[in-house]
Length: 370
Image (cartoon, rainbow, N blue to C red; front, side, top):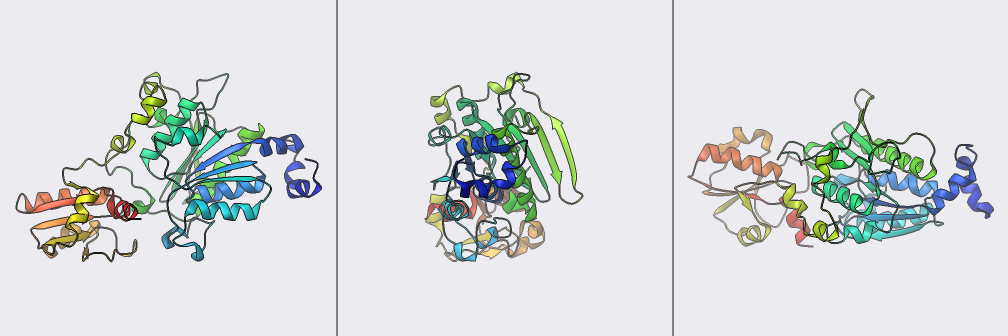
């Protein structure tokens, strides 16, 4: 900490007696991985870089899109179509050139998670799907890494610190909170349910705050505790979490078992009407098939690769007469709503129509083409 210019950068932190130069040095020595450079990851990354965390890793495979910008504050309209991870890395290097930024422009999976996570001290989970959350949790348990968890939907958010060693209590992990993945359609992600833009900023900043407290040892971090926040009424609710012996048996016992565990299947939509992306591709130009987008009007850019109609799931029952083909392929963003729509149409038409739902949704199909 001998460089005066660097001291000037962090002077407002160093002047805090609870943190001081010792705390600032701890931040410089820390290695933090942020998985997901989206609504939660963007504000967390901004404040971790600003605070002087010495090594920051970024994991994301997605591209910036226009409907990200109301909540993903690292990006601008000039970044649309670019890699989130690579672009986030560039921005952070401009914010603080004195720290090391490591970019993983890839999807977190059970084949790469252990190798990526092992090089960091604290992991921030900013992902938006259950398969990734269970996968990241299990990897952190296997590697004995502290996990800062965040989640958002509509107007509410959650934050907790999992798997952190404590002399007093057994460390809690994500499976103690959610032993089983929610049932199909029970919890929608932000693409499906929507989210107010400021909420991920609030929760993501709180995730950065918990991380700074864990690194420096100041304050009282949310270890083994879940904090929920409602942005409509500014109500906070905190609950103590307890480790449950039976949940430990659900976690793969070693790296080999972890790599064989099928997290997508564990958290997937199980639909009798499911159509694979390969089958979808084969049928895409069949003029006898009616393709129906069940997303809400204006929710996302419409695909231009094939002819289709838009009937939002919310009004599907009223617009069933508009569906006239004998073979119907339904799609939404992730596959959950189209699976529900397939159930509705099946009950209406019986066995008189062939009804399919695109697995992983139009987003999954579009990414498979990149």
